[in-house]
Amino acid sequence: MSHGIFSRSGGVSSHCFDSLNVGLSVGDGPAAVAENRHRILSRMGTRKAVFLNQVHGKTIHVLNQISNPAKRQTPIIADGLVTDMPGISLVIQVADCQGILLFDPDKKVVANVHSGWRGSVQNIIGNCIDVMKVRFKCQPGHIRAGISPSLGPCCAEFTNYKDEIPKALWSYKLSEKPYFDFWKMSCDQMIEKGMKKENIERMNICTQCNTEQFYSYRREKKTGRFACVISLKK
Ligand SMILES: [Zn+2]
Image 1 (cartoon, rainbow, N blue to C red):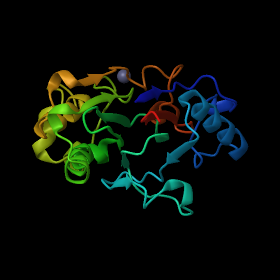
Image 2: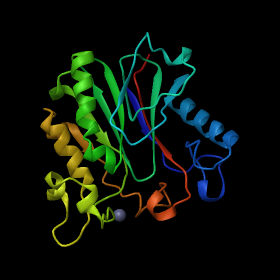
Image 3: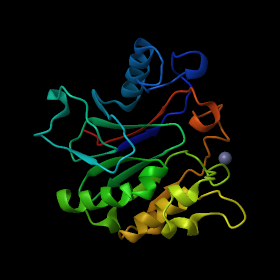
Image 4: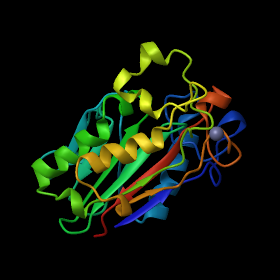
């Protein structure tokens, strides 16, 4: 298994997309995005990569021989990917949302999930673990996970949380102000599915506090997307 969280540096995009932007629908030039994606692929050492059409839902797409991405023409609309096929980079594109990389070393299965606040509220991460269990016979106790840089509890302000976030999740609100700890929410969602706390790693880097290194939609509005990538070695 190899994985990478790519910061915004090392690419060819300019201005607000400076510089390793992998997002195609944010207003950056397609030639620059293609070059940036190529650089990430060569760094990962895979010839194929799958980029999703992310829609803040909870759908997990399973890649297997039948749904071979090399033969696919239409974009995949989903917010998570799972595969046991080696040599394919699964890519999640973020700017404040969490990219959650998952790996089961026992069954040799990898997954990658895009979980912004809408994904967290819908528990897409729990949904992904269910898919890994049902489709690949993964045991949650074996799965390891890593949470990418994303909006931290220092900056995740939700003034309309009473309309946007279900009451059952208000325990993740800081006591004195309407800021939420989505990192802890993700950890709890994984532990609820049977994963072990010691197998979950959080980078604890807030994108809005670190825009020189990572894109932040909240801080910058017009900006790029950085790549969270995982693949199984051939
Ligand atoms: Zn912050």
